[in-house]
Image (cartoon, helix red, strand yellow):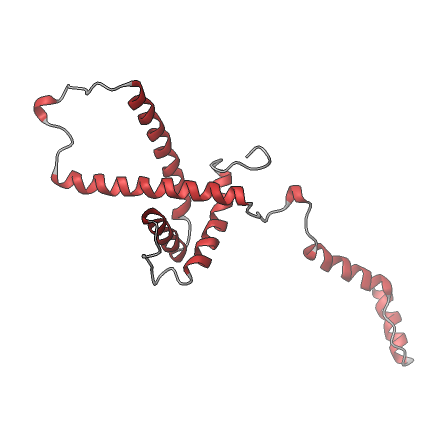
Length: 179
């Protein structure tokens, strides 16, 4: 490389302006490494498909309802005991349908706990946007808003995009054609 610089210096002394193609090629290749898109298999960026967006919406709605139940149960526990002491050993008989509902509810609760862990990693404005959006979807109208959420829809979409890799890593979102 030192001989190329000396050749450039000699050409500059003669008044010629010449760039050596070999140096330019090395520089161009070094820039292209950072500008090139990687193979799809190794692409770090995740583009959300409509199906994945719908899956995230369903997970967030399940999470929101779980969160409301949890906060309601916590409030009730301050005022009422969960069971009467005179009937400690009594178990209410249930039907098969109620057992199935309880099993599905248990699975949804475990899933919602995992979603909660992902949401805790988001920024405050994104968490606020998710909460506002879920409240509005629950009541069916756009009546709730938050100053913290800023541009609510854009922040909500950014939150969903940030949640996508976290939910995929926890295997809560199906990826590929089998979704």
